[in-house]
Image (cartoon, rainbow, N blue to C red; front, side):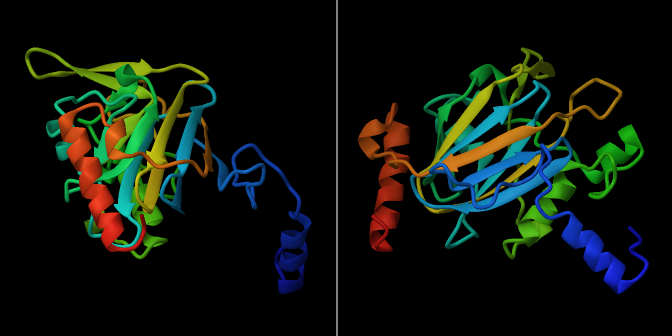
Length: 262
């Protein structure tokens, strides 16, 4: 069907209605879900989530690498602070029970499932420069888009800009720090690996699914990840596993109460 004319373009567009492919959002999500989307390697997604929402990420084929950013949905100047998430909780390897803290000492989310060995709080995601040097291009609409470029597109959908993007945290592919301070890439958690996050306040989540910065493979290798989200009960200070975590959840409860959200 020719799209050389407006009529042809319209008929072509309408002919795509009902087409289902592996990587696409399902709207409405249905089955009790508030988000159901499969993101390809080299893709991104974003959504505003209500407090208590459980966000489940599934690595379908074992080569996903999902980097995550979180923002307070109502006041996005408050955002994920990876340094405090590591420092305050005395643990650099993020797994079940780990809180993801903001720059205000509050819990934006809790990791409720995930392999601590396959998380990365150190390396962030790829950049236009790094991908251009490695793959020949890192622009967002190329075949080898960089994570930072895709985050910029996702942020724009929520009124945020490149300067609003802090360092991200990655899941499904792990890094270990050696005694000399060097990084060792541990590779994938394998097909079917799952990570779950629970929103402890209304949040905006940005996700990119791109190769890890330390992935040594020459080809741009990244497979789809499935995203599902459903309502659930938010955490409470008594759920905390450490005094520092309890303090963060108390700070969150205080903030939400002052805004009439808890």
